[in-house]
Every structure is written in structure tokens, then in C-alpha cells.
Image (cartoon, rainbow over all chains, first blue to last red; front, top):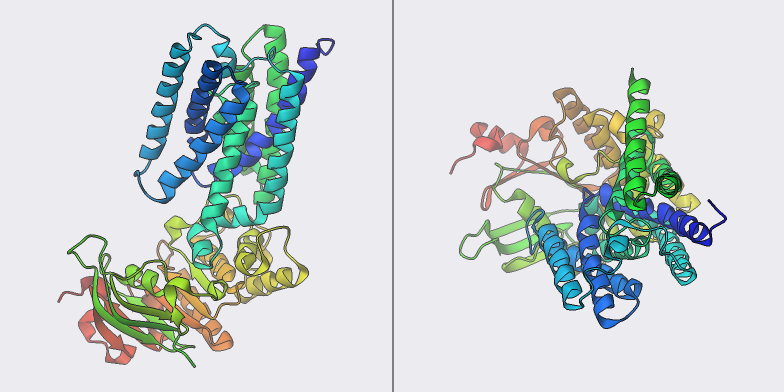
Length: 265
Length: 239
């Protein structure tokens, strides 16, 4: 499997994605915003479409759209411009509709759209790899530095606000990191399924973890494990890697739930 | 010495023409233990949010330790326990992780806690009697123990003002009694100003120095001994 360069590239990029996605997703899941990644994924699709229309690298336009969409979503939520999940619905449908309209305007409906939507192990280039690894390393560094502050907001957002902690800035940082994660992960997992890799490993880890720190570390381990196993299955079974990776992550949740039940038996 | 909390002629409404509070005056001295009670929807949480500078009154002035509450410069010295529904009690955090979050505003946002901060976290956990459970996940504790962990988090800020919003909601009667005794001891040991907000006076009534009954305005402000008998259950206050 590793004789092919594309597989080596896919595994390397996949490891970066597998570490970053659950680490960012942890702060969304704990704030009961597990589906936010999906909303941003739909906006990212519009970004990919804009890249195809303009003849620009889709990763660049996707990154811009994802970060802008994530920050807009956080703004709508924090300013209570849209109630409950209405902000998510707005971003969800506007994103996917804009993507379809732009792609059809570009006459690119038959381009390798499936690769962006569901991931493809054939599409990772050396340039992609360096961008993915660089952005993932940057994202993980920001998370490591702000871990204590972001955890404090997760536990008691109102208390942090009263004490003068810049909660808005921290929430926007998480939103922007979510945007970056989705843009860099779309080659491997696809924009429609990356949100699952942000949420499922965290949900699985929280079944068996004993602290916040152990949850995030276990989630990152499950994320990398899901990517490695999922890519292998996708290679040998000639399957879409996004689906395979997410199903492995879902399997990790079932296994973690089993372990938890045995512990409490 | 400036007052801990001062409201002068405060009026506020979430919708135009429908004031939640009208012409409220309130002065709380430093070191007082005050219960602010009233029926749900009576405006007590709104009153406290204005006092803390989280809401801007439509009319009137709100001061915190002599400074305008909205731009209060020493926010890190406010220990706040939010309503239970707003707390991440389901997150898989240990008691120590929760209490450590209380040092966030004073210790800076970046990097791990320093030794002094860790020592204060340990002291705060000990003050609420949870040393033996410090490394246990919060979600494995009882409701009363969880509330004590969040009180320790508020104490970790070394607060000059401790604000507890509905701290006994969802907590059984025995735990409410334990909580009231704990707050009385903390008040006497630390001489911290405590604002205890609840729809009922409950177990704290015998410990507080002052009761403030809120429904659209202040209906009663004085010693618990002077409270009219029918108003000991604030949820049934009708004017």
C-alpha cells in the first residue's frame, strides 16, 4: 500500500487531520455545538465552488470561506441574531445552495466534486500536504497555548464573562480554528463528513475519559486511529475514504460505550 | 470605604414600554451577606446582571465598588456561580479542573497555571471540603457536591464579591442545608460580600444579614426578622 506515493501523502495528511479535527471539535462538542462543523462544511463547499469558478486553488478559497462562515456563525449565535439552531440552518442551506449555484455557473458539475464532498485519497499533492501539516501544527499550537482558557469557557461561560475573561475573542478563535480544520480536512474526509471527525471521536472519548485532559487526548488518538484504519479500508475496498473514516469513528463510539457498560456492570 | 454594590434609580426593560425593574435603589456594603429573592420573572437576576455590569440600565446608575459597573476594572475579583443550567456539569472535568478555571481571569489566558495559582486552587477545594474528591470527575458527584465544586471555583478567584445565582436549584434539602452552613462559614472566615439569588430564601434565611425581595422593584429590604410572615415564601408574593 505504501509503495504508492499518493498513499504516503494521504496517510501523512490524514494523521494531521486526525489529530486536529477532534482537538478543535472537543471545544464545540462540550458547548453542545456538535453540528456547527456541518454548517461550516456546507459554506466550505461554496468556497471550493468559488475556486473552481475563478480558476484559483480550491483549498485557498475554501479556507477563506470556512473561516468567514465559522466567524459569522459565532457572531449570529453570540449576538442572538438567530434563535436556537436557526443560525445553523441559515448557514447550512445558504452554503450548500451557493455552492451548487456557483459550481453550475462554472460549468464544473462533473469536475471531481465527489472528491471534495466525500474525500479522496488520490487527490493529496505535496503542496496540499505541506499546507495541511502547517495549518494543523499552527492550530494545535494555538489550542495548546489557550487550552486552559478555552476549557474555562466550556465549563462556565457566564462566570468567565463576569470575571472579565475575553469570552467573545476565545469563541471566535475556536470558530476560526474550526474553519481551518474543515478546509484542510476536505481532501481526506470531504466537506460533508469532516464534522463527524470533529464530533464522533470526542463523543466516544467522553464515554470512557476521566478528565477534560484525558478526553481531548483520547479523542485525538481515536481521530488518528479512525483515519489510519479508514484509509486502509478505503484503499483495499476501493471505497470513499470519508465514509470509511467516519464509520470507524462511529465504531469507536460503540466500543467505548461497551467499555463503559462493562465498567459500570 | 465604597459600597460593594450601588444602584440609583435603575430602570430596565427587555422590550420598550415593558419595564422589568423601575426606579430601583439598592446599596450593599462590603462584607454583607445578602439574599436577593423573589418570584421567577420578578427581575432579581436582571437586577444582579445590571449590578455586575452585564446589562446597561435604560435609566439610572449602577456602581461596583465605587466604579461604573459597565466598565468595572477589577472584574477578576468577582466570583460568580451561574445558574446550574448554564454550567458544563456534564463535561468530563475533574473537580480540580473546574476549580482551576476560577484562576483564569487572574492568572492570564496562556500556558499552564503557576505554582501559586495551583496552591490557591488546592485551598479553595479544601474550603468546601472536597479534597478527597479533587481528582474525581464532576459528573460522578451528587448535585450538592457539584455546587460546592463550583463555589470553590468562584473562591479560587479570591473574590471581594461572591455572587451565587440560584445555587440550590436541583439540589436536595440536605445538600441545601450543607450549602447554607458552608456559605455562612465562608462569609465569617473571609469577610467576603455575598449576594445569594434565589426564588426562595430556603436554608440561608437564618444566616443572611439582610433580605431583599424583588418583584419589578424592591418590595422589602431589611433584616430577616422584620420580614412579614406571608413573604417567607417569595414565590407567593403578590402586590
